[in-house]
Length: 525
Image 1 (cartoon, helix red, strand yellow):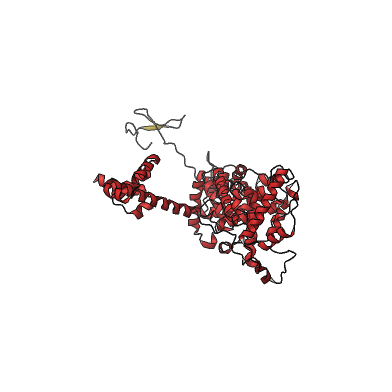
Image 2 (cartoon, helix red, strand yellow; image 1 turned 90 degrees about the horizontal axis):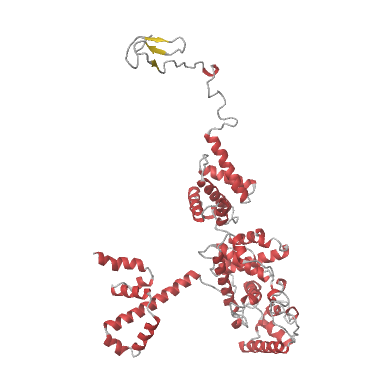
């Protein structure tokens, strides 16, 4: 045999007849890997031991790429099904994922987040409401992580302007009202009224900048809870917040802000001085009716000569002077208060002559006298036992609300979705400012007062003689300050002033940066 031994390099090799192995006759070592038999013959040659020709990628044995695509499509179908997407919308999400991944799809937790982001972007492109928090809850991921993925998808697809409209908060309210379990047992007519009133109040909140720079869903929950109570539908703000995937504490805060805005509007009513946050819910029907008629005043051309009033005050006075109020034991039998808000339909009005009604000037003293007389009569009737508590929870309807059909017209354009510029041009009796802007202005004012107080303290310490001459009550002021105490902010402001920091910089409130720049840097040097 040719070749040499791998152990002793001898060339005396022979093949064993039994095993077929090659053995060295000098050292007796069996030579390894010398009996390889190549299987030649092409496709029609003999078959191998483990791999059979034509079976790769078929049946239950899939290659890696096909299996990855199959599993990825199952994930897409599962997520879109849980989100309630139609077949066509699910196909749009699948195409979007395939475009982003260049047909490779993927596996792992990141792929589920990508599918959720594509689902959200696809709905936003069609201007259909789908809260990001709902998507995050469906795929069980962190909201901020999903938001970062959404930004990456938007940047990759280069979606700008009309191609990627803003979040539809009005559509989100309607979707929440019609899909929420809390409203599942509400009659269709009542639900339609709740939706219209909710859209009206929500757009008023947008006009008052209560949703600017904030998450929209807490305000949606707050509006739904308020209008539900006005229509005698008992819902819990905790349940509604959970169903719209919003934080309960934030929803309660938005609810209080909404009530505060309604109180400001209610102050323009004849009895507005008696409206507070405690009783605004009871007065909300009248306030909303005022806001509705105020929003229609520009189009109907009535009441435009009454400053800050969008209701027909003549009708109120006429009804008070023309009729005797008949008090009954229940609030439902009281004289209908909505007569004070009617713009048209009064028997003594001539719609063809709008100028005649403007000739009647009603003083505030007259209105106050009528309202005071009304309160005195009601107090007398209560004390005599002829009438129970008005708007009591145990009489009539719940919380004493009138039927929504009595005070709600639903004819205002605010009951429908409006563009932002149309919304800002509509008058609802109040022009609010963004709460963040108001808070910032108050903070600037507070810091400015603290700066002035700190300067006075520094002046009294450095120049006590001038302080004694210039301020007679300096000693009393020091005692008062000592009783109140000086906060940490006052000490920081004094330190910054002693290091010649400009007052304009201190008013901004960036104390850490200013301390590091003007105080600690001098210590290091």
